Image (tube, rainbow, N blue to C red):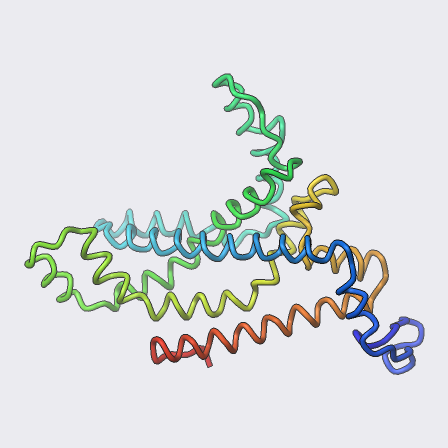
Length: 263
């Protein structure tokens, strides 16, 4: 379809073949650079901040010795992962709209209200922050499993040598988690050109297209709403190709560094 002028009435085999027409058109679009930049900024922000938060939370959670409290905290943090953005978007809007709870709190302290959902200066940060809040609990389960597999004797030996808690974390816990961290990072790289369609679609508006429009939302508007099916397929094909290249590269690097690989 990406190499055709696809017409639904003619079908896949009846539509005219046009070669690289849609790919050339995509390269020359004036907005394509901005859209790719938005996609990379949002996706990388989610990956980096989400990974750091998940690692930090799993380390701190592992320090809780009361079993009931540990499971309760883990469940509460883990729960948002199972909620759809269709549901969570209404929660975010109620919290961060101009009349929402956050702005009412700011006004109570005598501060100016912030248009989180309608400002190009704050929208990307809101998207990254809310996604990290939703997903870091799920990722922390994997890192917590990696922590429990580390030999406790290493921590005991470090403690006997006088190492503080922070030094034990830095020199024992994190190196022990490193293979899993690299594997998770490699898997996340495949979605680097997919900044989260469902989240952004439910939160953005034309006012914040400048910083909130990403490849997925652009393909939806142009390919489906605008009925340019072949052009949408061409953009999607390029995104998938880049994701495959990144996955293969990350898989090779991970195997070389840790001796483990995804496939």
